[in-house]
Length: 368
Ligand SMILES: *Cc1c(COP(=O)(O)O)cnc(C)c1O
Image (cartoon, rainbow, N blue to C red; front, side):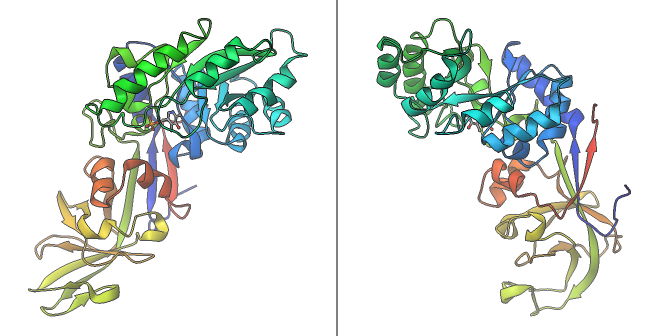
């Protein structure tokens, strides 16, 4: 398949992904890394991402939905028998689907515990599960008291083999936030209830909060994909998503003229603009227009006016040697994911998951 030169291209560098996996592993002092590949690996392709990470040694993955787990099981195939944890857990009636694809639910409530344990009672050794403790996020998970009650109850855990106790940090990207230490303390209490199970608290940012937060297994997502743990680029991580688009037309805008919808940009001097073939239908956020910068001809160029569905205007200098078809970088080695996200008033996660199907995708460094 050859690339269409008149199109936006998304190149996903799996070599950089492998580099980031190694960097996170180093940061986590060699502990097990269970990559989070929910939402199609943050929009970058769960099949390709997980296959490459399997080749790097990853043996457990996290997805959000059961359907994501089903797709991932098929993509990995029988020769890559990874543990696939489903963060949504085991809603009522879901056990047959989880069992059919050998998915391991992260049990989030007493109701989910009974759904899974009712199927586990006839299974020798019980059914494998992770247990999520809510230590302060108030999203999913049992409260510490509920976990205690479960452990003390006569047969609340019958039919289950709890292999992982986990919780999720609400404020890990702000290392000084007092919620981190409070959640850590509650998690330490909760995990002591399950001495046989391994424990996991850290997402990407958690990996960088210090040894106390590491436990037995860490669950990074964004930093595998190049996003810094604290919302800014991190020197040990490489960009995985590279987005470029061709110039469609170059125009001279006269003083007093405007560019684009809503006429929000007015030239105050003769202005040279390049119109590039990337808009919000390609997944570039509309809010990127306000402060966004792209890279062309060895310099950053600012966006002029509003982004449209199919194109964006950028300012170029009058002496720049450039022609329609030349490619502009919107994400990559020069335009960092975290910078593009903050210019758009959002976070790296959202920028990645918005990258649209219209972009032509290429994978570098795929491993079978
Ligand atoms: C999404 C998610 C992660 C990964 O978080 P990152 O910040 O992307 O590293 C880890 N654990 C849970 C429970 C999640 O929902």
